[in-house]
Image 1: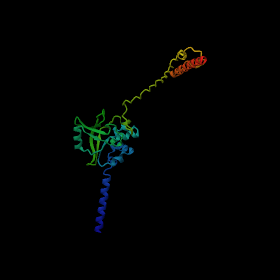
Image 2 (image 1 turned 30 degrees about the horizontal axis):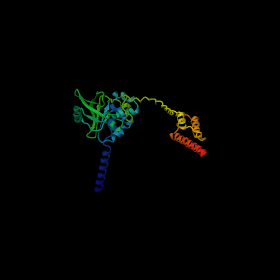
Image 3 (image 1 turned 30 degrees about the vertical axis):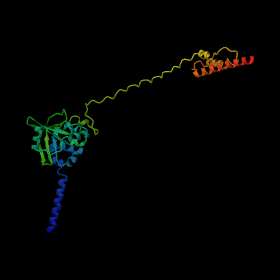
Image 4 (image 1 turned 180 degrees about the vertical axis):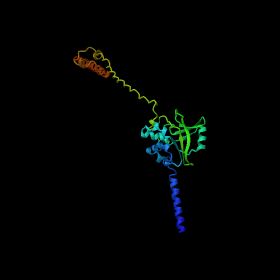
Length: 279
């Protein structure tokens, strides 16, 4: 019996250890004990952030009193989730740590950084000191610094801390962020280039035909010495007729040479004919 009781105690201890390790805290249950934060608590549940926060081993939640939640509740659900995510810091901050960070003007990573929607410094929360008070603000340029620390509401050392601040933290441009991560509104958009008409195609220059050769050139070449032979005028006349039919065409030089040789041949035959008569 004693051995069985000892075994049961060991099993029960293991179960308790396992449960506390898997879920070290429950933000909703912690805030259930503080009715002044009921609106903030309800929004954590509605947006699903409560379950996501409970999965982290160390976290600090910056809560706001119901009377200061009006600037958040009237927005779309997707925007509310983004804003609420900036009020959870991914580390444990107690009083001493907050004092050190605020004096140095340090930054803490908030839950919005994990969403993949943070643009530039939207996923960072800045801790500063002003007039002896701790100020929480967005690290984004131009963010107002008016959310003051009021008190520590609850704490489980090194796991979770719940800290009340005077009003919601304002993160510039957070409502315009999308999964593709464009810059916030107000950033000038690139103007598309003005289309330029293509120049008309150039007309091809007409190639002027070379000047026609003078028909007299071939006639001069064809003229041979005076003869009574019947063949002296034959080749030359044919060349003249060809030139007259197509005066615009260039006549190759070898044609003129052939005509001259034909004329010379005709003259020789004529002389031989005369000699034959005398003989």
